[in-house]
Amino acid sequence: MKICYLDAFSGISGDMTVGALLDAGAPVDALLDSLNSLNTGARYEVEKTARGGIASSKFRVHPDAAPSKHRHLSHILEMIDHAPLAPRAQAAASAVFRRLGDAEAHVHGIPIEKVHFHEVGAADSIADIVGACVALDLLDISEVHASAINVGSGTVQTEHGLLPVPAPATAALLEGKPIYSRGPEVELTTPTGAALAVTLASSFGPLPAMRILHIGHGAGDRDFKQHANVLRVLIGERTHAPEATLVSVIEANIDDSSPQVLGYALEKLMDAGALDAALSPLQMKKNRPGTLLRVIAKPEDQERLAQIIFAETSTLGLRIHAAERRIEPRSMVEVETPYGQVRGKVSSQGVFTPEYDDCKAIAERTSMPLTRVLAAAQEAYLKNPK
Picture 1 (cartoon, rainbow, N blue to C red):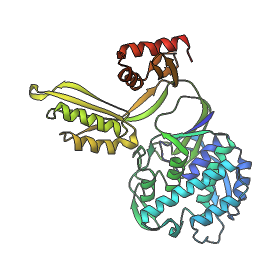
Picture 2: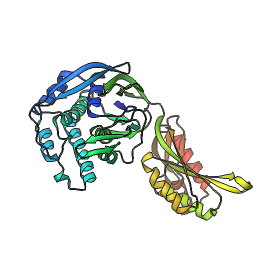
Picture 3: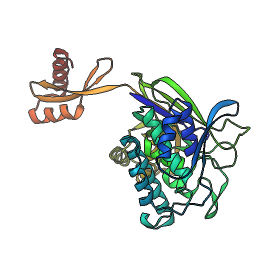
């Protein structure tokens, strides 16, 4: 399985994505043939250049001299549907434009049918989105993952006037995704780049375990002194190393909530999607005993879980920081015991762990001690390992 990692340390745009994938080995002629089949009237150019001393590829679109009329989503989807593109690239490009249309409609408070695609509907943005999807298909990429996104800062000039960075459509697209701001006060992530990332990437976080085959750099328009203005893509094959994911750790020191309240809060957090939640004893200021509440959450869930902590406990403040979570590969199996079937996890090291809930249900139903049911499950697995 080939995977592609979008390393957006200098943001992401459509042309940077196409340039990076071409730089990583996507065949230029095949990609340009696909773009020419759209009949937008534009010309395309791939230029070898450098940003911050890093060799990279710059993808350029030269639109027809005649100004294009504004296009609606249905017109763009029709162009994509009628072009002789590979089915996977065609479906991906349509999905990206639908995501972008939803964001624009949400920002402007209008039905998606009334959204006029100004910059988005122009030939360069159509080429960027279709080009990125075609390049991923040509490289035979099965999965796309992305880093946290550097969105930039300051303001950006648009057809609607001067707007803060990230622009409203970009912010709407990246809602729930890990973002940050570093570097010069300019827009580093465009709506087109954000739409590509959130539509195509299955996860956002650290580099997944992989054996790197190709690396590509797509050049941005500007050359910064602070850092190389490129989008880096790493293409490789998934390995069996423990999976690494980015998580948010939410903590609070609490010294004035009862154990019943804290226990209830823990249950609410787990039911709401926390990956893990725990309580630990503390000795706090003025020698008062207290409790440390620690919650591990997906980055997109951190705000929702933080609100539950504020609502269900007496704390007035939280600490939230990012952490890397390593996950040992595992599989689920079922074993047959004298008391009934029990599910369990098997690690890559061959260690079997029975599911507690299954064993508890059997113990309650049969009046057998829980320890005996757990032992029976282990014995059943050892007799017939899977």
